[in-house]
Image 1 (cartoon, helix red, strand yellow):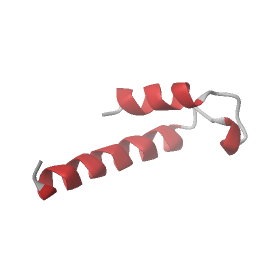
Image 2: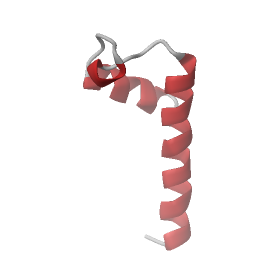
Image 3: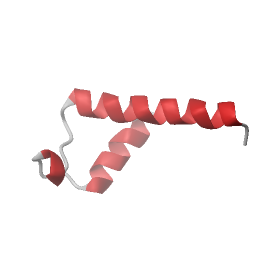
Image 4: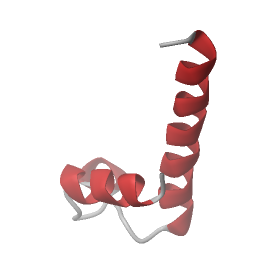
Length: 48
């Protein structure tokens, strides 16, 4: 895989994570919430 492709995917993933956190609907235990890691992963995947 080309380096630029990896970087683009990393940027997309970072934006998806930021979007989920900014939305504020999913909070894992370490964020003071009750949602599971799977809930967070599914929300992130939905934003990709």
